[in-house]
Length: 85
Image 1 (cartoon, one colour):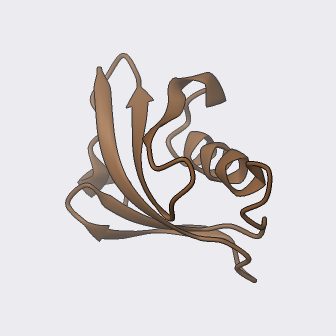
Image 2 (cartoon, one colour; image 1 turned 45 degrees about the vertical axis):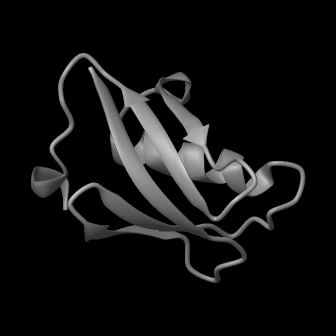
């Protein structure tokens, strides 16, 4: 099952974390700078830990060089954001 999420990334944040901003929208704060894919790697790591899936199940579908990204999470079950946040 593929779940699409709209994610706004805030790089160079002092406190990393994830917050829900809409139905399928998240704001992800990462410590890494947007340099050489470090912030993207940290976004994938945070989301994989948060949703309890392997990093290989989380991919950036659009926006690899933008703060606004579309993330795809592939799992066997549907992810319900309302139950997680």
